[in-house]
Amino acid sequence: MSIVITGTPGVGKHTVGKEISQKLGLEIIDINEIAKNSGLFEQNDESNDVDTEKLQEILRAKISNKSIIIGHLAPYVLDSEKIDRVIVLRRSPYDLIQVYEKRGYSDKKSKENASSEILGVITYDAINQLQDKVIQINVTSRDIQEVLERVESAISGNIDSEEVDWLELVTKNNDLKKFFAD
Ligand SMILES: Nc1ncnc2c1ncn2[C@@H]1O[C@H](COP(=O)(O)OP(=O)(O)O)[C@@H](O)[C@H]1O
Ligand SMILES: [Mg+2]
Image (cartoon, rainbow, N blue to C red; front, side, top):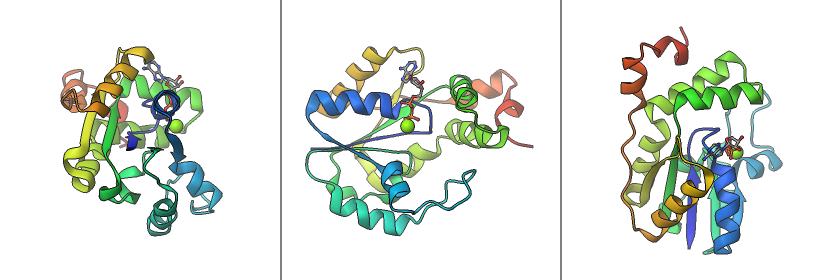
């Protein structure tokens, strides 16, 4: 079994991935760590530019049938035939900007990531690449235990993908300016 945990930075991928890895005996494949160790990230640490073709090649050799693959780049670097399930974690942009503040992200980087979450970019790209294997889970207002239960159900195919619409929420609150750069 090969599982992917993806989503915008700060949604909880590593927190969830580590627990699921232990519980199901799957080896963690951390996409960012592999990209970093292979020198595939561009020098500028404000950007996330990475050589996705090379990264895809390296990952191809590492993924087994007992892998849990973690990273926001997953939709851009994975071969769909090797993957059984793709979990996209979604989290309110209001919560995400607090995570980014703690991480010391710049205003620009924080907005880039929050607006990407609002638009559902990773979900859109994951569905494009990995089709019906994709299940979306909203972690907002759920503690880690509850999230883990949902993720395990999603891996077994026992729950449907959840609807998420941050754009509607943020528009209703008149907060677009908070999350989108001028
Ligand atoms: N379900 C949750 N509820 C509240 N906080 C969470 C939850 N999951 C993760 N966190 C916290 O959110 C932050 C980001 O989680 P992390 O696993 O590092 O995200 P990612 O790997 O997606 O960037 C951490 O401080 C983590 O403790
Ligand atoms: Mg992480």
